[in-house]
Image 1 (cartoon, rainbow, N blue to C red):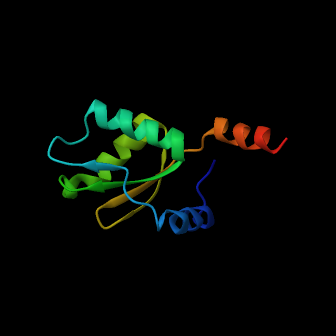
Image 2: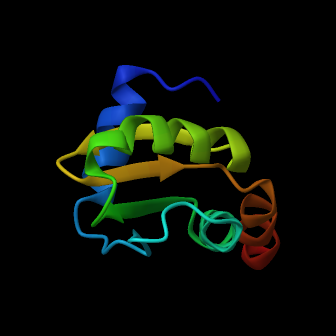
Length: 99
């Protein structure tokens, strides 16, 4: 899905009330952190990541995270990155539950 400015704005609004599910601390972006982000994106599609450390490198780290998890960056606000990755299985679950 291409991230248009309208979609980006809508996702930012949806993420407003979300709490960060992953916090980047003194150990940085480890394989374990990438795994947690990947699991969270699969479960929720839209997540927030908070940077307590590495604030000066948050753009580069977020780009790396997006590449490794096949997610899209919605926006970085302050020290919080908002990521989105569509989960096609979630859409199937919604359709099958309506039957």
